[in-house]
Every structure is written in structure tokens, then in C-alpha cells.
Amino acid sequence: MLQLTVLREQTDLVVAGLNKKNYKNAAQEVAALLDLDQQRRQVQSEHDDMQAKANSISKEIGMLMKNGEREKAESYKAQTSELKQQAKSLAEQLSTIEEEVQKALYRLPNLPHESVPAGRSAEDNEVVLQHGDIPQLHEGALPHWELIQKYDIIDFELGNKISGAGFPVYKKQGARLQRALINFFLDEAIQAGYMEVQPPILVNEASGYGTGQLPDKDGQMYHATADNLYLIPTAEVPITNLYRDTIVPVEQLPIKNTGHTPCFRREAGSWGADVRGLNRLHQFDKVEIVQITLPEKSYETLEDMSRYIQGLLQKLELPFRVLRLCGGDMGFTSALTYDMEVYSAAQSRWLEVSSASNFETFQANRLKLRYKNETGKTQLLHTLNGSALALPRIVAAILENNQTPDGINMPKVLHPYLGFEKIG
Image 1 (tube, helix red, strand yellow):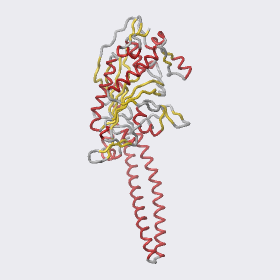
Image 2: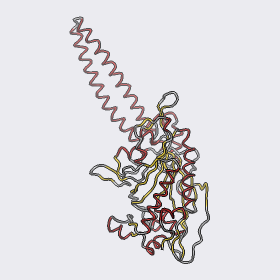
Image 3: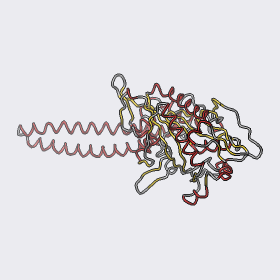
Image 4: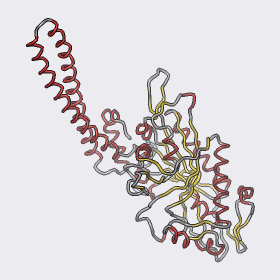
């Protein structure tokens, strides 16, 4: 959530940033929000003055009664009662305005970092790095949705029977490949200094607001309405919320957590020919990395996280590229995002498998996640997260890129985890 002080003091910068993210009616919404804030401050001032005046008169009543000036004391009591009633009315008005201000702030996305390129869609993203050779497949090579049928390792029809489209059943070597990737990703993260946590996969409304999924993604998350709980779209939500309403001692920074969870996304309206098989699912597994750090360290941390994720892709022997997302393709909460894409040889296209993002103070402001600087002043921390990694498209690329007429070779780094070297 953007800070009101920033909106007041750097209005033009805020509007320019929102425009870079292609946020509609940015200038008008910011102006309306600042008008609301001005009303809030005016009512707050009137309320405080009224309350102070009532308190001042109340102090005099006792002295008047002591001096026998009962008539004047009764007059002051009437004034005090009237002032308190007016103060109560102003407090109710203030509460209504504060709620409107909060709702307006929740609607505004984070501002993009100055390095974010302008643009409206994925076509405008900037390729900053490409690694590895594009595989040359044998004649008759198959896309992964045909490979998984051929080797009977993932069953979409069974998943559809149990739950619906987008909920596959992994079995045999497919299930073992899932488990191997999860264990490999977790072990790598732990070796890199991340502490493993296993968080809940249902979160309350406060957690959704804390990391910015609500209200932005309301309707795109699975909602258990009876208990008002949400199935998580990513482990970022519960892991980051571990530190909600916390003042973190500086000596404990940076905080580095990792966790594996299933992830749930309704992905309404996203189905089509380009999302067949594992390319887009309602439920999938992912290992997430989350960092909380000092503001001056966060962009160095983002580069480190990006390099770490790239290292995983290299160990899996997958060709990949890194994109710096343009303003129009960035997430609601992000100030700067790197997407990592692997090349899917049988589909002849790049597939996004990870995003690493710096949210700066946007989440921390919602979470009240803070630290005390050298002077003892309380300030907001920066939060970051990255997929390290999401499994479905990684599996798709491994299957497609490593297929041979005799089976599918597994990356060497996974052999100790799998217990086999080839599918088929």
C-alpha cells in the first residue's frame, strides 16, 4: 500500500508511476484521494479541538463546585455535554472518511522502479539475459501433453473426474518427478541460507490484504466462504504474513524463508489452445523463497535472488532467459520484477517458470512490518519473493526437451532424488 505522505509530497511522481503501470484515471483518483485525506485531517483537527475544549471545561467544573458557583458549574456541564456530543459525531464522521481513504489506498498499485521499461503488454518486456542452447529434437517429437499419455505419468481425465479441469493426477514416475523436484528445490534453498517453513495453505482475509492479493485478486482466489478463508495462490502469502505486525531487530535481518506448498488459482477466462497440458493449472506445486531486508539492501537482494533462480535452471540443464517486466505487465504489488522463462522445444515457445519481485515498502506498509533505525525511529522494511521454482512448466520443459525415441532422459542433478535416470 502506498503511503499517504508519499502521495501528498510527491504527487506528480506517484501519478507518473501509476501511468507507467497503465493504471486508468491515475491523476483523478490520486486527486480524489488527496481531497479525502484533506477532509480527514480537517475533521480530525475539529474533533481534537472539540475534545480538548470539553476536557478543559470539565477541569473547571470541579473548581466551580468547590467555590459554591453551582449555577455556573451546571452551565459548564451543559456545554461539556454538548461538546462531547459534537466530538462523538465528528468521530463517527472521521471513521467513515478513514474507511474511504483506506479503500482508495487499497485500489492503488505499487509504483514501478525507475529502471522498469515503459510498455503495455508482454511484448514490451526487456530481455536482459539468455542462457543455453535451444534443443534440436528428433523427428516426431511430441508436446508434453502427448508424452504424459504415452508414458502414463500424469492423468488429466482422472483429475477432471475428481475435481475438474486443471487438477491433474500425478502417478508412477510422474509423481516421483514431482517429489524429486520439490526436494531438490528445498535442499538448494536451505544450502543458500533460507530457513524452511511449512505454512498453512488457507489464509484469513487480513493475510490476503497484508500481501496485496486482496482486494486486487478478489474473485481470482478460491474462497471458503463458510469460514472466510482463502486457498493460497502462492506460499508468499502465508510466509510473508508470519511477520505481520512485527518490529524486526536489525541484527535478525535479512530474513530468508523458503517453503513448499500447493498453490490454487481460479485463472478465470484463461483457457485456450496456448494453455494445454501443464501450461496452466488450477492447482500446482511450488517452492517459494521470501526475503525481508533493509531498504538500502533490497535491490542488491533482488539481483541475488534472480541469480539464485537462474542457477537452479542451469542445474536442470534448461535453456532460459530473464526478462525485466514493463510497467503494463507487472504485478499489482511489485516495484520491479524479473521473469525467468524456459524454452519448450516441442511447443517452440518460452514458458514463464518464475518471477522474482521487489515490493519495496508496499507490502510492509499493509503488514506493519518494521524495524528501528540507528536513531531509534521506526521505519518500514522491504519485502521480496521469488518462485524457486513452480513445477508444472518446469516438468513440461524437462519432458519435451529431453525426449528421445527411446524415452525421456532426466537431468543429472535429479538422479539421486529420482532413483531412475529415464522415463520409459
